[in-house]
Length: 226
Length: 275
Image (tube, rainbow over all chains, first blue to last red; front, side, top):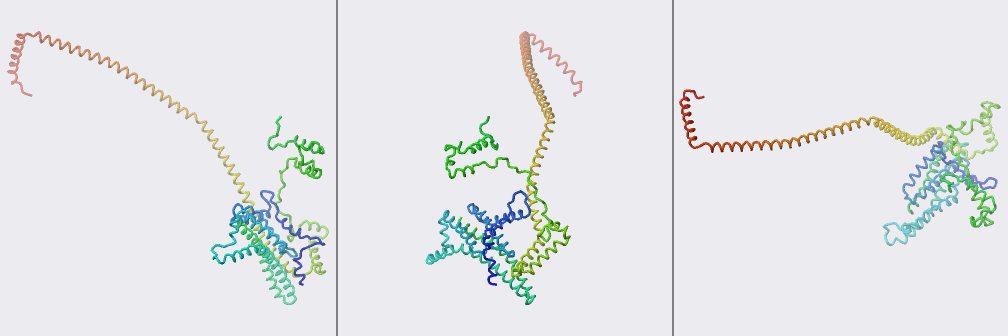
């Protein structure tokens, strides 16, 4: 049972070949390229959603920050679609792997920090010391701010991994509970099944929210540094 | 013959010439024109890289139409063609029996094991089906509305442009109609000018008349004056001489006569009433 619980998070391989690359590339098929002026319903809705999200997300940025528009939009689309696809039964979610999330978070965060240090060195260094700190606290505070800066990518990656993994685990466990309770008492199993349905609704929301949060935080780090 | 072709014209001669150059191995491409090709390792790669692609005009129209409705499906997954395919051999209920049989077979032989995942699958798929059934049509309508808005916007632009051109045509037509009626304006102007000329002519005529009359009046008045002067002078002369000719005695006689006459009159006067 223990092995079965974590089996869904193992990197999938078919006959010894790692197909995780194919699984990571799969969501891109679901976003067709608009080739005409008036497209089918799927593309129209996706276009509208992307317009809505990008307008809202890039409103706070200046000209320099808006060069990141493609990056941020691809990020939110990828994380959102991967999370949502992971809710289907017997599917593998790449974002449950810490390796992949670190691979997304560290380069993006490092990009924002390096951009800040290159173009606005003084302002970026000034972030290490909040305004209005009393004089004796300054050395400690600089250390604390440095630690908090370096924790940002870790937090981004671990937040996403933990949320999605925890959700999947919960669904698995409660499903298992329902399965075990069916032979014991059908009513309890039914209640547990209701809980499972509510949890699924939550997981759908969490999938989208986590994508949003990830991208929003990257955008905030960008805003600080441009 | 023009040396370089105009913009947008594909120069067939240059392309053919270029291809011919490429065909000769290192022939025309000596070190002077393409030193990169002399490298024996990378030369062929560069040769392929500079090969001219897309030598024909791209055909962009007419593009095939997007079908208005998707293919018909049963249970949201299986296309109706499958049912048609099985119909001759198994009738209407064939595919359903096949499906049920496959599911029961996989369950009983534990090809599909009921695990915790089964329940999560039931809940997820159930939720999805519920959402699609309830909100599917409205989301479809929303997508159609988005497309309609886009088309309406462009249609508006087109209509505005057509309206503009129509207004221009109408304005032009009215201008042309006005041109037809321009002769009234010209007639009026011509009449005005004629009247003004007439007026000026009459005025000048009148002025001439007045000037001439002035001069003639002058001459007349000069004449009159002369005559009067002469008359006065004559009268004065005559008077003077008459007065001179009257001797003192004649004067006394005359005065006595006058007095006698007056006395006579004075005697007659009181008999007449005073008026």
